[in-house]
Length: 286
Image (cartoon, rainbow, N blue to C red; front, side, top):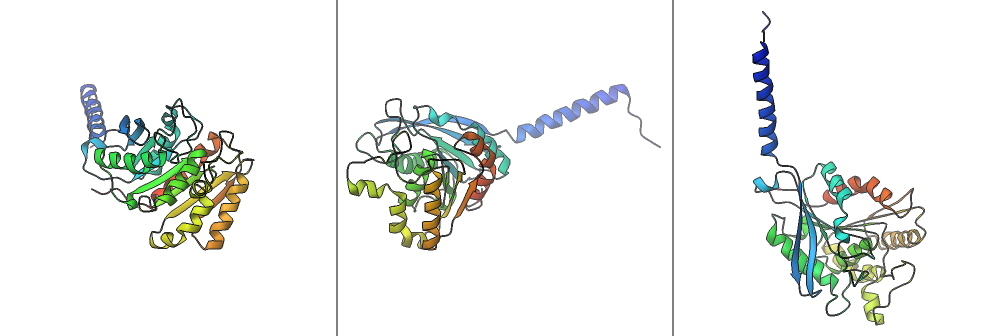
């Protein structure tokens, strides 16, 4: 005999379903963004950053891999906040991780290029030392290179590749999205002079690859980069780096996509490239 549900019973069942849904949602709070800062000796002031924490972070004991994201330059001191599309892409990967997007410039120094340039402008040190230590101290991270990726967009792509090669003991994966591979002026068309041939060479990714070839064998690092076919400023140098890596026998992934130098391209490929990076890191573990 089929069961019969009265009007009152239907209301009770509906209320129970709503309550169950709320209880389920409460057991897995959604991802949340946290604006944070640390007092940096390297840049002689506060270093701000956004930390995007995965669903359920506040009620668990899981440790997560961390994706560090470097924004483009020139920028103001709040340029690090424009990461919403990357947060959405990270959710879409289905792989729980923490996203950290640090400040890469100030209102008065809009294009420091993520390199150490002297007292008060030591951006390499601020990000790879001070920031990483603060993030590991404040959040439940996987506290080793196997739990860290460094990704950058445009000038951040240069910064990511330069910093990762300079600190192979810190990061297991590095990606450049429409980046370049030597420090440039704000136009992106002229090489930036850091004051000496030695300093310029140290900041040049092409030179860094030559000097770090041996370490890349002992510290395997995923290297990935892409560029838009119509990116007139940077496509040639990306092709050059791909050729250099191939000739040196260094494993890497390189793609040229239809498109230019804009967020439409980066947003289109954010999820697959985040997935690629996370596949080379230790997974979240409880």
